[in-house]
Amino acid sequence: MANSYRSPLLDLPGAVPGEPPDEGVALHYGDPFAEQRRLESWVGYVDLSHREVVRVSGPDRLSWLHSLTTQHLTELPPGQATEALVLSPHGHIEHALYLVDDGEATWMHVEPGTAADLVSFLDKMRFMLRVEVADVTAEWAIIWEPVREPVPGRLTRVTDHGRDVFLPRGELAEYGRTHEHPAGMWAYEALRIARHQPRLRFETDHRTIPHEAGWLDRAVHLDKGCYRGQETVARVHFRGRPPRRLVFLHLDGSVETLPPHGAPVEYEGRQVGFVTSSARQPGGHRSGLRRDGLRATPGARHRACSVCGRSAAREVTPAHRRGAGVRPGEPRTASYTSRISVTGPSFTRETSM
Image (tube, rainbow, N blue to C red; front, side, top):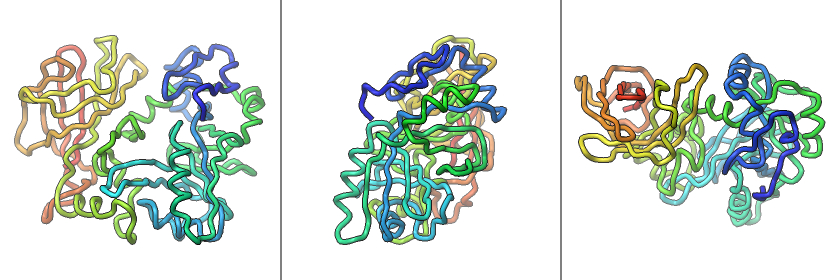
């Protein structure tokens, strides 16, 4: 999608344009907290028409995509949503794909500005297989709705959190006129962060592997055949922990500003991580995600930390979340939650061990 893109839904009352990489759609429509509360109540919709759409057709499409991505796709039934990653030969995340198959083609939406590189890579890997790859962003747009059932007569990608509706781009303006309670990217991103969902180019950099960003459970099938980057995925999962981990932060809202992307997190005088995403929540609370290399240690109850230049105390308590990349002999469900109380904001981070 070109940087000059402007959604027709920006003409709705109160619309405030978003910022990169979400320019072209609304940041909010006048009251982001009310918009978020409505979404949490399963009411409203979010304009994601700046995201790009790729379609892969042909009888070999599922087995071909299965061989190129981290997900098991050979038996993907029509209408079932899934996620997949394209990795580098060294296992670093290059693309995040949000897929659904309609029985004739596999559709995926991806981050703004990434479809051209994805299509170029896929075209190079076609060889003699019966597949066709097309960037159809100019014809199709994505609308997210907090509804967990498909739209009759429309291609819909349904998840536990809502549905992605593939809408002909020419129908966007009419959609805005006939649907109530639009919500912007401010509310949508706050919900994403609260669900601990990673986002490409926010929670990733050029050396991020799936284990570090929380994509192992949702987008990686550990028992499938070979694909590019699989050696790194298997080695880290079965032989040791990833060097960094995505964790969750709670801020108490006493400081107005949010920590920016890349803000350092320090422990015992050294930087152990950085903030990746942050958002305001209703009630004045702040939340965010960050990646770090600090490992929780059982029995270590309080340790001094520094988050965005503020002193903090770290408390470790047992939690139960599925671990990603555990050492042989360790329970795969072992994890720890680190609670950080900061002078000013307070942060809570969850670290799967």
